[in-house]
Image (tube, rainbow, N blue to C red; front, side):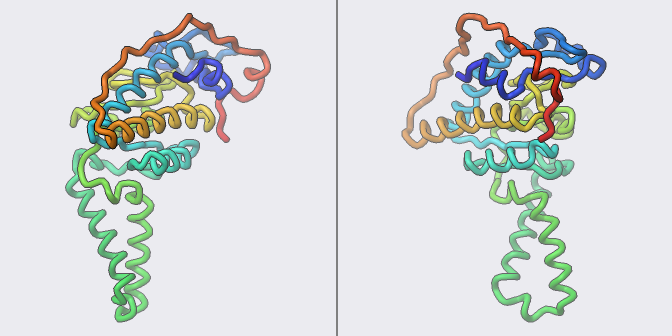
Length: 260
């Protein structure tokens, strides 16, 4: 299980200003400092352990995970994590109906693959230049939005979301289809409807990366279990002796919400 100190060093404890919070997150807040809410990292560590256990066992059973993070700080992390885990991702824009209207989305993916085939089989050479330009423009748009799910032939077993406020449409679609949600929830988020909430700073790149990498690790463990045909058990998430996060003065004097 990831150590509280690692979470602290990554800035996972930084919440939003006190005037930009969701009261439903009160149970995950340790206190406040300089008008910034401080997240209880002991609870973060436990929730992260619960989420990783779920993800590991889900993947071991043969299901896939869809990584979703379209905000600027999360785009690269989301893509790298999904590729490392051998899973799917959305990191540019969530198109309405990506889950609830999956059949139509698959048609768009098929269209992308058809255009790619046209570019490889010599068809482009026989088409007018203007038409080729239009096809390439269409391919670029489709690639931008669908590259991460082009090989996703069925709905995922679960979704991992960075920033449930920004990805509220994804949350709504997942809830409607009863697809389990694992998500980072900051102090401005609504944890209701999130099956495995992980309280933490969803604005800092380092914070996003440490949580996302933990999920990737769980995915890889699940893949290993599946390949070895080991039936996973769900261990109860345990936490060692309570550790109160010590927030030094200097980090709080710096920007509380990383944007690098």
